[in-house]
Length: 218
Image (cartoon, rainbow, N blue to C red; front, side, top):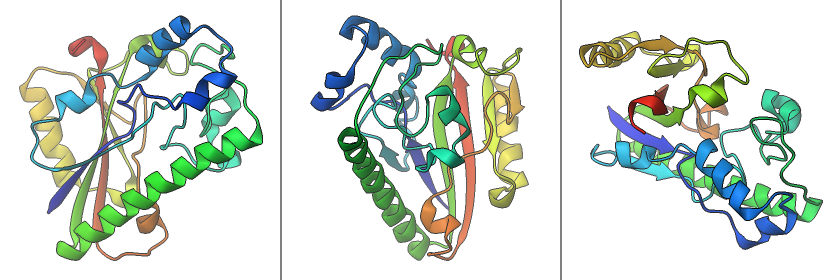
């Protein structure tokens, strides 16, 4: 079985045209960007000998893990759809026009095309693929949307892309190291590429999200 590490929220970069619509100071934005990124997650997983796909830009520019259609995205009601207007605490931080939105969606589409291409390539080589969706979270941010207590590590699973043996192995390793865990709390599910959802490629895909609490590494 091949393994693909998906790292969508570790980048702090934004394109230059992002700043035209910024409603807060750059200093304040940089603070929120640090808080809302999965800071250092790419470093935590760097030694694993697997293929990695990492987003180029910060989630505060475009969140490539959201649904492209805001009507399907539950977080869009908080101003955190595919293109954010609000921060985790409800503060309005960005306004933009349709031209800006279309630029962001083009980046979104390119990213998912790249992801689909990589997944298709790997499934042609081996018809079993484990996608580890690599994230981190903070108690501070999670408490705005979910009830405490929060674990050291959250595992997000999808019932249609689930393998009990693999999940049990991950849990065993977590417990062996003395960490607490919960499944689908505070965050649930895991990214499944469009080419799999739309049945454009054949093979067995297992999708597991790993959310590491920032309190154990920052």
